[in-house]
Amino acid sequence: MPDYSTTLILYTLGIFLVAVIGALPPLFGKWSDRQLHLFIAFGAGVFLGAIFLHLLPDALTQGSGDLASGMVLLGFVLVLLIERILLGSHKVHCGDNCDHRHEVVGIIALIGLSVHAITAGFVMGVGMIEPELGLVIFIAIIAHKGIESFSLATIFRLANFSIKKTMGYILLFSIMTPLGALISIPFLKSLSDVSLAIPTGITAGTFLYVATLDLLPEAFHVDKEKASPFIWLVLGIFIMYLIKIAGV
Image (cartoon, rainbow, N blue to C red; front, side):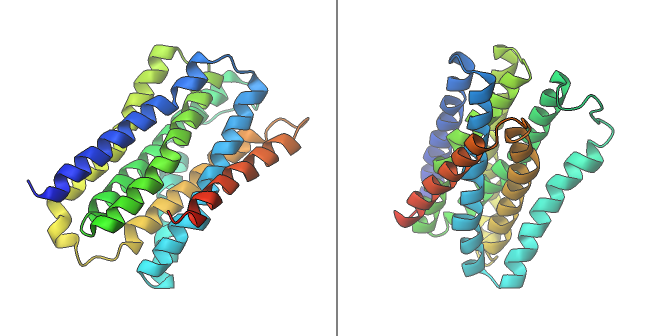
């Protein structure tokens, strides 16, 4: 096994552990409904910051503008297809006050995040062709992986899932990035000439869908309070900005 494969295994192990640990606070802490929605707003901010400060600029520098923007659109449409078409028969009719709504949102978020988690793992695997690039992608994934798990666990908590059921879903989600990295290994040689704008752009598109159509509506669905979720949203974006200026 080549040297990069050993490094890739270590990276994926670290990502798996961060994903699992990130889900623990919402499960075992005592959080109010308001606090849980603020955490979701924070997670949405991290996703938006990752898109516009990290992934999209990277995709634009790795390929033409048309290619990068096309891949972002493709990623967005792929998750839209999964949610609105493939899961279209599983509609919610009981409105914002129905617990079942949180359950459906949680499953949809799990699917959407899993799609981009696999893609991110694939991107990292391909990036190992250039060790420095692989490290940058690994750091970028670690920077938001815990928040993704935190947000998922928060939504599952709102849906009143049991701890056992939630941890089962979290473990499933946690293996998605390692799975994507594993899938990339047999194709590294043939993909060495493929523009990284393709997987990076697709990842940005899936992030965009989950942030704007899954997390943000949930974070702002309470009409009485809008300012606090917005502040936490901006805080999430700001953290990704700090990571950006730190050189990640």
